[in-house]
Length: 496
Ligand code: NAD
Image 1 (cartoon, rainbow, N blue to C red):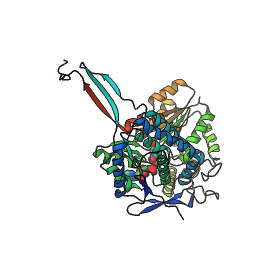
Image 2 (spheres, helix red, strand yellow):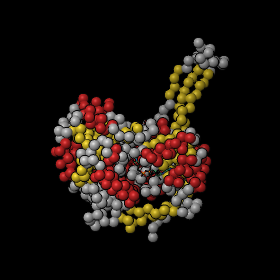
Image 3 (spheres, protein in one colour):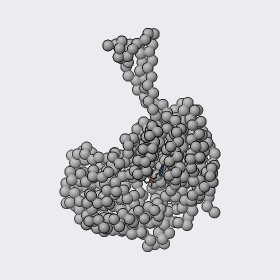
Image 4 (cartoon, rainbow, N blue to C red):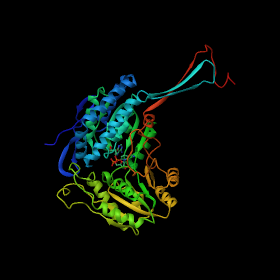
């Protein structure tokens, strides 16, 4: 019998008001039902938002360092439960356990980082233009935050939003992805044990209807979203009309450039990890490889040999290097892009291009082979659109300027990478690449919790998660003027 999971509202585990539910299955094994989860609608969101609004009245008044103590405790609990949580995440979303352990570790890092930030949350002061007057500005919480996330980092990505938001004194209505709902409940368990009071953190499960109800709820003042650009833009226009603060982390079409002077073994390792790590299902995945013409053929030959040996299988099995894609819909999307790639111009699919059904390990899941297209040109759809699967498009560049030009020729701007031994080229690339993140001699993936994370163009709307910039999302500025002159001093008038 499949386990029945519930929503977490006001410190209690409850079913959806309608009684509707949905099922979640292991993408590596269709017969493995993880459980059923509430299919929540606007009435459930209403209950969660009400609980969060009530809890906000007291949570905002708790001294920030005391809130930080609870976040530190959450970090300790995540450390204690790391292996168990990693295995649960692998079961629901597929990536190998060594990767889901990294996912939990990022939440641990974020918890400890947010805890220490509660002793800073710096404001600033500046001299007044008038005598006997003090000017201060400090951060204040905003209220109830609606957090809506994707499934590919079920612990790390929500933690980037939830933990800083709590540190700042906000309360939360969280909707995990319907493809990784169990992790949302695990997060609630951790925060409850850490001492976060009832109502401060709430989880409602569901799909787009539930997410839309969060976006439209008048009591929810901030929306923190991670997901596709199509959905993010829709959310931004609805929330914008209600004057909500909206932080969007959306899609990517990231590229790695390889120059002839690079350490080519390192560049090769980087390309394999960037393109096929998490089965290519990272917002920062390397989905384009831009190779200098002088090393184009040689580098491709070495890459194909290595990529063809990647061990595909269930993430829970020791030795698996690449797990399944998340679900049947995504598998079909990947297949469709392979079909488009094969039909486009002169691109050639030289590796993979099919479902990986060859072994007992993969027969029952949504597995796809590592796939490589060569001779791709920048105008092709497989060079421009986010595929979100193990598909790498390789393009040829004449020189560094041409490579950067190709890299920038995309609607997205999240991550980018350059492999070179030439320091001048590295700094030119850092200056000219249009992306929120540029790695030098590092693949396009590998963000750290204490550094700003986010992208430009179609990837984001100007906010950055990670680092102290996340605290900008979840606070407002309150400016205070204190006049101790004992007389009416009119700024801009009495002093000039
Ligand atoms: P998605 O946009 O389909 O769904 C994301 C979340 O939004 C889910 O919880 C979903 O239920 C919810 N949702 C869907 N429709 C909604 C609506 N109309 N109103 C409110 N909520 C709605 O994305 P996905 O398939 O879960 O994730 C893959 C995408 O996420 C990729 O594009 C990837 O690049 C992106 N992503 C970005 C980052 C980043 O930090 N930039 C990180 C991880 C994933």
